[in-house]
Length: 158
Image 1 (spheres, rainbow, N blue to C red):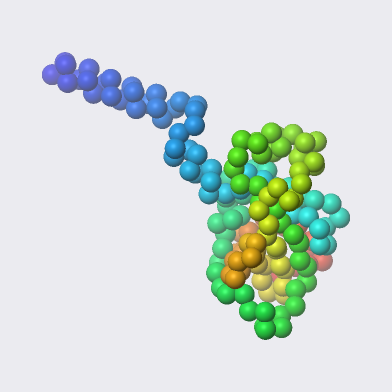
Image 2 (image 1 turned 60 degrees about the horizontal axis):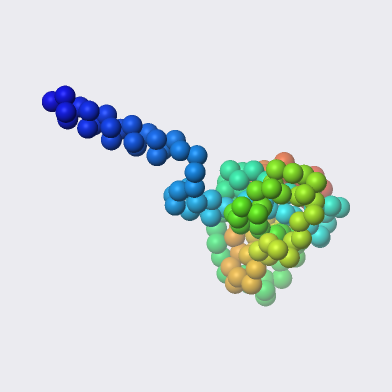
């Protein structure tokens, strides 16, 4: 029995070491790929670029989708604002930018993945690159955009 206990204690200690080690693991790296490291909103109706650099908030934002639907160019629905978006997916290169605001302002949107944010009278949608689908964002995403000043007070949902 003491031998079984020491074997169990050894396995437990090794497991704890692996779980608390501060190094890249496949699971940790895979989770980082779920959201961009930096989201940059620029052009359109913004006076200057707005950056989101908190990975957890970025994960919450990109996963706050109420509906995915085909883009219908014949709908005739106009938008109140259109803002270009650059998504900088996790790469060790972007960590330095996320931590240094001076360096962050030098980011070139061409180095990110393109997207467009469209604000309409009753929806906010994110369109990735040349995708034929729009992601209609929910209230949580709308609140994040508003908190960062991407959605101005003059463009409120009705």
